[in-house]
Amino acid sequence: MWMVMALHGAALAAGPDAGPEQRHEILNQGEVGIGLTAPAHTTWDADFRPDGEKVERRMTRSSTVYALDPSVGLLNGLEIGARLPVVQNIAGRAGDPDTTRFGLGDISFHAGGEVRFEQVDIGGRLKVKAPSGQSTPEGDNPALPLGSGQPDMDITAHLTQWSGGVHLLGTVGYQIRFEGEKVQDGQSVDFKPGGVLHLEGGLKSWASGRYAAGIAVLYHVAEADQVEQAGDMEAVGEGSALASAVVSFTVRAADFLDLSIATRTENVAGTLSLVDTGVPLWGRNSPSAKMVPIQIRADFRI
Image (cartoon, rainbow, N blue to C red; front, side, top):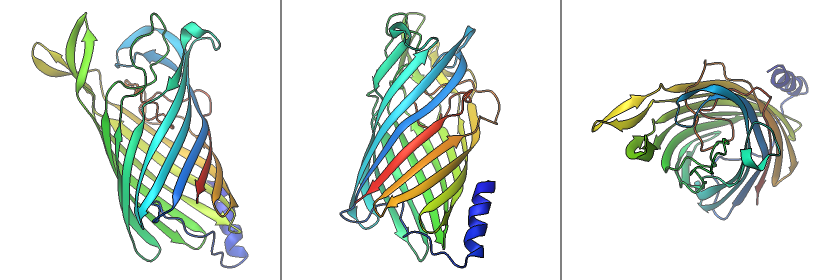
């Protein structure tokens, strides 16, 4: 926060700073965007199974996600894209193959559009996730699965504003996690994960048109899961919530390339009772980090 204020104050003291060229959230016609993230690392002490049931034995778990985000602009303000995550999950001691899972996570595809006004854009994205990550048990391996095992759909709206060297971003979205099946007491029963409401608000303050410090506030809240019991769907466990802040530093290394490093604070909304094994980058619906998570990202736009 102080870094943001200091950079913004320095820019004002030196006179008006137009900042870098404005970049819309949605690509223009013919533009190609490629995002690379490596790694996004979060470590936590887990005392909940992926289905939200509490266990007595505590075990340190870590998750590292490498992601490729390609997208292409079909028209000005209309794009399609995908997310291809590679996930490494470890339970207990690192280096033990019996407590490690590594492979492709849940792939997602999106379509996005926006309406553009002077300095303000309003738009949204529709994202569909395919359960491509391995979610079936691997013997007695206690590591979390690589995927959720179920599809979901996410609808997100965003508003952005550029004013000189300051870029503001706000989003609100809802993730629908579709009904499926799970094994309970040796029998297959209907299972419906709770939906997830997620909010984000933040800003970046640019100096000299090349360097930016940013801060954002994240909030995610999930409804309780439901399972079939005696022919009826009943809630199991409780819902979950996660609130945290993200601090970032970005360098516009070239007209087509932004390099950034960011870290997320620990969860400040209380203890969670649900682990979403879709492994999103900033730990949506996963317990708070016990080690500082670091995300290093390169964004190309050609």
